[in-house]
Image (cartoon, rainbow, N blue to C red):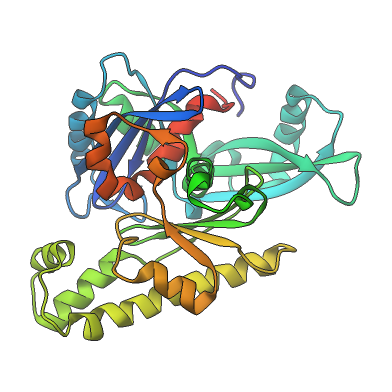
Length: 359
């Protein structure tokens, strides 16, 4: 069930975010004052090959990964990818604070059958020690995660097919939360101690992660994304899907588009964010989030940042690690300035090169 002990030193891993429209890859190196983007690659994937973070057409995904692999440095042999939070069961349990990692592992293995509602031979299990328990200082909170092995194997097999070893399969929400480290420079000085909601707007899934004091304290996914916007354009103007998608990207739409299509979609998107804030507050002892950081392909919708700030009264920004503690060479920086927000999950995965992981 568990394999080797906790590792403290990791190889440099490329973070690979397998999305519904694109597969994104980021390679980070550590610098004296932050990180540097050494490689960033985005390759379109065949429509329908990936849905809700699940691989439906392995051949199409492998073809896209082959293009990514060719553009990576030849020395890169290992990768970090992620599975959907909806595919992962997480549970915070309490364990004796004086137990070693090995003793915790052994105890969880014994108790897993009663903790996880799936046959144990069908799941992969991992755990992470969190902060001490607030009500009993002799206990420590431990995050237990279980995912059906077939969901993990699909990502591992796809990466193996292009000679990349999957050293880490993360949970997407936690990868997004980890990327919070890279954008603190965009926010006021108190942001590290505040609740920062990261909102990644994908094609058909919105991923939410709230980070505070360097720890991801909440994750959530909602079936809503940029494809709904494309379908609205398609329906209202009688376009084919590809035509509507192109018009959305280029902005070549009739004058009434902002009132007829954009505003209603933004109102729906705002409701999704409000709902996730409500769920977060209901599940924590925190009254509100202090900052919102938007990322993903839909994040740069015209007026979205101002709408959130004005309607919710929460300071919002579009993720740009280049304004935080991330650098890139001059040529890459020119390209990334327009598109870096869509790489946030991939950046969070690439950061696993500098955090502990299990083999």
